[in-house]
Length: 249
Image 1 (tube, helix red, strand yellow):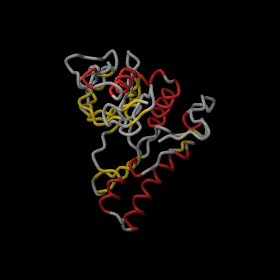
Image 2 (cartoon, helix red, strand yellow; image 1 turned 135 degrees about the vertical axis):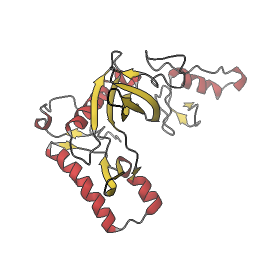
Image 3 (cartoon, one colour; image 1 turned 180 degrees about the horizontal axis):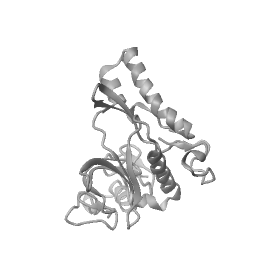
Image 4 (tube, one colour; image 1 turned 30 degrees about the vertical axis):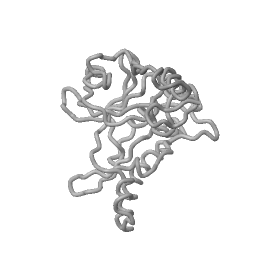
């Protein structure tokens, strides 16, 4: 066993991510952490951070992607958040100056064919959905060095999870209106044979729009399932991405 260098939680040897805080781990980090708990700390040398990809720039050690341009179309301006499989950035669509959210798959994840296929499916699904209550997706592509990304609208409201945490209980009339708008998004997806499978308050955002202070936007179709292939002109003969009993989301 070794320990996460960020939160000190025990993790299995050779783990890629900490189960407690989500910190990315490298073999060198877990080895150093294991040594730190068996040797005096004065003998443990600090490990340099791993290089994320060929886009690494020593002038920007905080993040190799900030300031970069993807496919001559999207400039990455700042990081918004990070998860086990990827990170989300605030960016700009060149030529239109549209502010966007850019979701990138971690470079090391491209070695996992299932993860790559799931990310590709998410991009395909999002680009096919047009309902006003589904997050709008502008592009899905791969850079010259193999980095996969999805560019979508940047949401600036608050999640339904935040509303529940601060304002519960919610009046039934208000909740009925939110559920009605959620159903509009899901009805289109279901008509195309797409099941979200990760519908939770964190993935339902409420945006302020003209005449509607809580305009619903559903996001994160990362583990969606295609029940049939005719909805997007594809087929349903691809790899089985989720094994029976596997937990995702």
